Figure 1 (cartoon, rainbow, N blue to C red):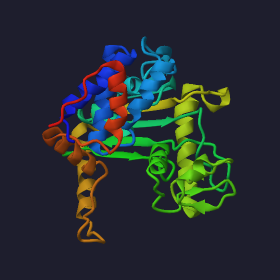
Figure 2: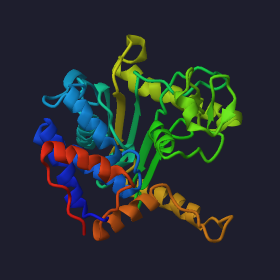
Figure 3: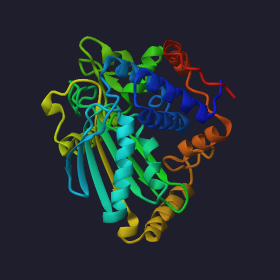
Length: 348
């Protein structure tokens, strides 16, 4: 079935509020979960909602309050998220960093002890819609499922990083992981009895495999870093960078024995207007975008596209025609809707 985005946001917000989350936080979390689905990031949108609801009900996700300010030096801020909803915290962080960047030229904010933050790309338009350049990264210091290059024992989470780049047309929206794929996609493939499209993991002995079940075996295997068995040093380097930006700058992470599903987060926003100027910035980014799109494609049926172009096209289609959630998502959420007496969304 297909649903209007506003109806899905209403449904998700009511579920979160019924579970105990502050209404203002529930509205923000639902907005960015639905936006992730509409952009095509279906493992990090409404698919996360059942787990969020369970975390609220168990007390693992805090439902009220504000982040604790550890330090605030104007252009550099550190928060303790105190296990508040990561989607809400990250949206709030990007908004604050964007506001400060408009005064100082740039602003960076690190968050320790956030809950899961969902889809990084969904937050980028908060900045790019105002002509601002944004960078977002996150890691989970309580978990490990990606081994360092050449190793067998997992050290990192997939450690994604996203960058939103304004141009003189649609922004470029980059969202990539330091590992070949994500934990959420691996879990989905296991549930659906499917395999990775390639040798994306290793088992506990270090043998390459396309079986996502290797990650939950005893002993467990590991996802491979971006670049795979021959060029995985690239993903390894990215993971080290993300862990330094998120846990290092927040001053809290793996070294503290963190437990419980969550995130360390880094947000940085730049205002090009306070550098060489917004028009000059977009002249450069628009020019390179033109060069990329004009590059003769290897496959004539698949022209070169910019990162985020497909996501924005999906979002616009969903806004005008509604969204059909990935199979199984609505069935899972109906269980919670019955439990909390929340009306299911009306299909189009």
